[in-house]
Length: 187
Image (cartoon, rainbow, N blue to C red):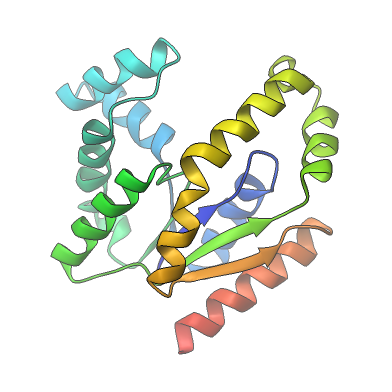
């Protein structure tokens, strides 16, 4: 099974991604982790991408896609994976789809974590991080709306988008996500 999690900051993607991946026997893939691993192994592409990452900028799509493609060749990805935080742009989504089509293994599901904006502010402000001020949160939500939210229509047209209510306890949200994915697995 090949899955993508999408949702605004604070929606619970990070909390659920590791748990869902473990429950379903999928490899958890975070582009940040992929980049750090490539950099730490001294791979040229990882060192190049790290220049962007370490200066607080996003790495160019081409570098990110190449890192992802290289990572998907690893043995632990052969039985399925869950992307947490990737793709972030429509361009990345189309490149990922092309890559997976070339391999004959398209995405099975894209889970959108749906949550009211007011709840996001409550969640993010309660974390106590310096980078979770109201101004910073508003900017992160604006960036999400402008760059990542357009992916929803793209994936809906492709028939792989599932919307999950992200309100409730972590156990309740986990149950909804797993139920949706199990339904897709058996369909």
